[in-house]
Image (cartoon, rainbow, N blue to C red; front, top):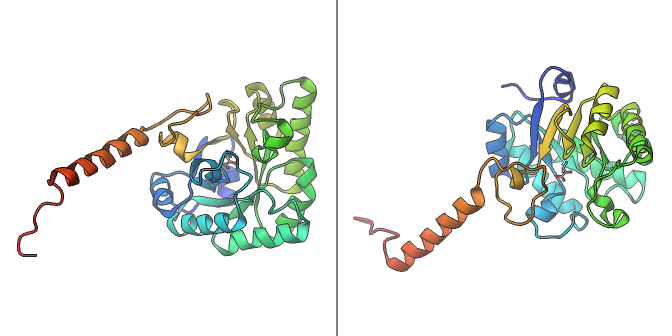
Length: 263
Ligand code: KIV
C-alpha cells in the first residue's frame, strides 16, 4: 500500500468509499494503518473517550501535539490529520497559524477545523501556507454550549441551506475535504453531490464519500452511551475486562507467573 496523500484522498471521490477513523496513540494507529484505514484523525474526541472529559472543550494543544506525534510515528500509509482543539484557532489567526504549523512539525499531514463561512479566512491562509485543511460543518462539537447539547443540525430547510452554504464556502476557501457531522441523510447527499471535494460523514448517512467512526466506538471500547449511528465492529471492552479479571485471579491463585526454571 502506498502512502495516502491529500491528492489521492480527493481522487477517491466517486471511485471508492473510504472508511476512516480516529486514533490517539501509536499502538492503535499502527493497527488501523496496517489494516488499511486511509485516514486517521487525531480527534479532539480524545477528550471524551480517552481523557475522561464530558466534552471536547478541555483538550489542550499540548495533548493534541503529543497524541499527533505518537500517531504519526506509527501510521506509515494513512493520512494523519490533527484536530485543532477548542481555543487553538479562536484567539486570533496568527496564533491559529502557529498552532497548525506545530501540528505539521510533529508529523500531521493536515489539520481539521470546525466551522463554515466563519473560518474561511483561516482556511484560505492555511492552505496558502501549504497546510492542508479538512473542514467540519453541521454539528460541530466545540459549539456544544451554543447548541445546548450535541444536537443534529440542518433539520429545517433554512438550517439545511445554511449547512450547504458553509460546505460550499469551505470548499471555495481551499479545504481538501469536509466532515459532515450529525446532519440528515438527505442533506448530506445534497452536499456530497454539490461539492467536488470528498465529504466524510459521521451520523450523516450512507451517501457521503467517506465515513468517520470514533475508534473507541468502532472497537466497542466504550461501555457508556454510544450514538445510534455507531456500529461496533468488535467488543474489546468485554475482552479487556475478561483478560484483566483472569490476570487478577491467576495472580491471586498462584498460577501466574509460573516458576521459571534456572532463573
Ligand atoms: O474529534 C473527532 O473525533 C471528530 C470526528 C467525530 C469527526 O471530530
